[in-house]
Image 1 (cartoon, rainbow, N blue to C red):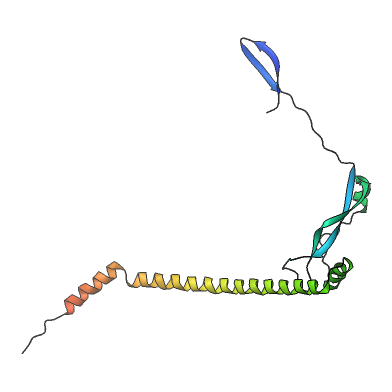
Image 2 (image 1 turned 45 degrees about the vertical axis):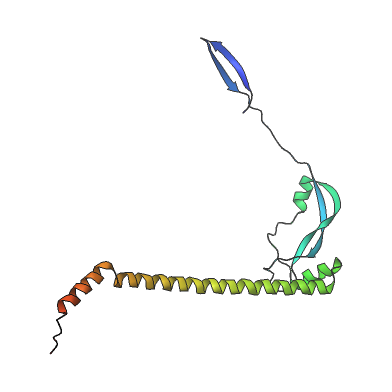
Length: 163
């Protein structure tokens, strides 16, 4: 809670109002870092190896904020081609066998997700069918219908005579 200042004192009651300080945050420079690129594990990559940022980085220069804002690109999300991702990984010294392994891992994850999606839809349809069957049986074999059926059966029964 903000500190309170005593404003006036009359009739044994004290009146306080809060002191409000305006707080501003400003930035004047942007420190740019360039991170290494490594093989990623993102399963949404359609073709080629996924790419990710590594832990290592190189400190860039400090740039005034206004200049940085003028220079930066505002093109939204850009997608790299599989060839571009492979070239970047090779440029950063990632071995070819590691790139191929990442591509295979992504394909396995995608196949597993597809199987799960299919099982979910089959399972949903099965559960729906079971619910419908249960509802049908409940309607067909309700207590009232069973008692009514037994009563009709007793009325139609006749004694068997032995000769």
